[in-house]
Length: 215
Ligand SMILES: NC(=O)c1ccc[n+]([C@@H]2O[C@H](COP(=O)([O-])OP(=O)(O)OC[C@H]3O[C@@H](n4cnc5c(N)ncnc54)[C@H](OP(=O)(O)O)[C@@H]3O)[C@@H](O)[C@H]2O)c1
Image (cartoon, rainbow, N blue to C red; front, side):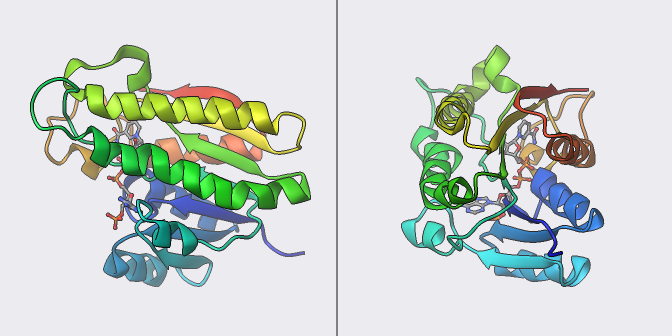
């Protein structure tokens, strides 16, 4: 029997990278997407032949087209840009964040979810954020995009109801990744490995709906 396969966006660092490691350990075939060819080559070198890599900037149409239009047993929509910024003052980062955190996911799901629909199975996992529950004031631009992603998730969930495809929104609290390189991380913080195990178990156990993970 062929191995199960998972598509993971933002596969080279942080939560995405930890998910790649988790699924390789669990015997899955993994297709990982990111922009840096060097980081992708290193990922493949470190984790071996079970990892397929796709170099793509998902904010572009060419980047979306680089992802094969085929069936995946699981899809983990993880890639996002985290940047502090307000909606009304300071540098306007909203559009930049929107392009990856929201629009790329919409475009990618228009491309791939029909493949899961044809088979009537598969599992879509969207990585959201606990930030959508409490709106940290200096992160409103980022949180607004994660809230929009939550809206997309609710749309996918509604449209896929009864299709056989499972849908899960995992909302992690602060997690120690490169996202915090320019910010003081909180003292209590999750590790990417903990989020990846949570995601992995959600897929293995077929858990659906919005699931929160925090310290
Ligand atoms: N860290 C936290 O505290 C936290 C908390 C709650 C939720 N989250 C969510 O968890 C997810 C992962 O966050 P993280 O902190 O692990 O991120 P991260 O460490 O910054 O990693 C981001 C990944 O996305 C890739 N990426 C960035 N821009 C891309 C683009 N345009 N096209 C394709 N790939 C791109 C990066 O590789 P390249 O740069 O090479 O493209 C990298 O592999 C995000 O959805 C984030 O919103 C994070």
